Amino acid sequence: MPSAERALCDTGPLVAFIDSNDQAHEECRTTLKRFAGRLVTTWPVLSEAFYLLARQLERELLWQFILGEGLEIVDLEFAELPRMRSLMARYADLPMDFADASLIVIAERLRLNRVLTIDQRDFRVYRPRHIRSFAIFP
Image (cartoon, rainbow, N blue to C red; front, side, top):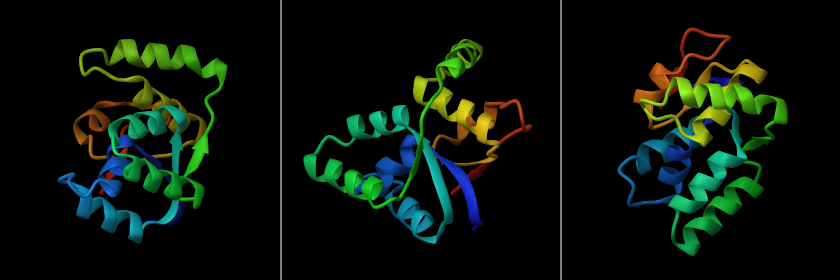
């Protein structure tokens, strides 16, 4: 596991970390406990996670994780929206959603090359400008 580095965090691991019924729950809990770096995400990813965590207790656990500084939340810049639009059009066959597009533009801005995701199929296809492909974990 990397230490003192930053990695993107997608929606799936956040949901799996909280939801004990998720099939990736144990793997994501173990990964998040071992990861010594800083996880970076966006507001669209958090919006998706809160939507998918339907029970109030689950949502409260996510709040605790966020407020306990479990994540670095990066704001999108208006100037990045055309790039997100372009990415969503380019990967429309997958299709790429708004949350994934937000992660790609943040990865490009911050020059991040690792992503914590369960959605390996899509993140193996995405090609950010600054790298050939993402290093995916868990």
